[in-house]
Image (cartoon, rainbow, N blue to C red; front, side, top):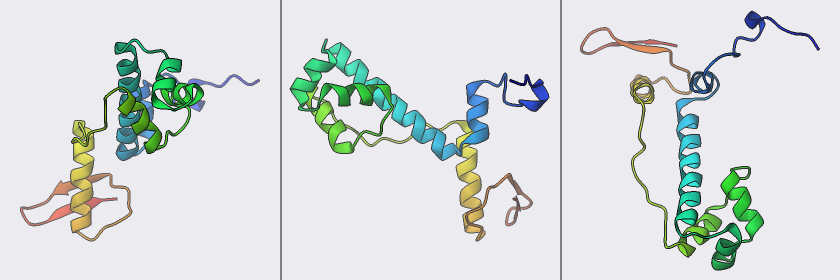
Length: 139
């Protein structure tokens, strides 16, 4: 096995958040964070009710292995399955606004400016306001 220098491995030593921003779009990051929050909320609800996975399985009609995979995040849980599990704990899903970081808000703002200017399906690097009526878009 060859040992590489740090220059050959530019991602070594990066914080996860920095690495995540390099490889994912802001929308993908938001989706992954929302999924993780949902899994954590399900686990916390189950533990608050002092239920084991097996007890939750019996109560919900969803098998224990499916609940285990859902809680570990290794599979994509069907919405119907998630709703059955939540309903058995007297819980449901709610549609609420996403919490966006400053960089995500800026990305959405730049994307909407580009769309208004007729630019679609491109990766934007920056949008600068040149005057009150014109904007400079850098791709």
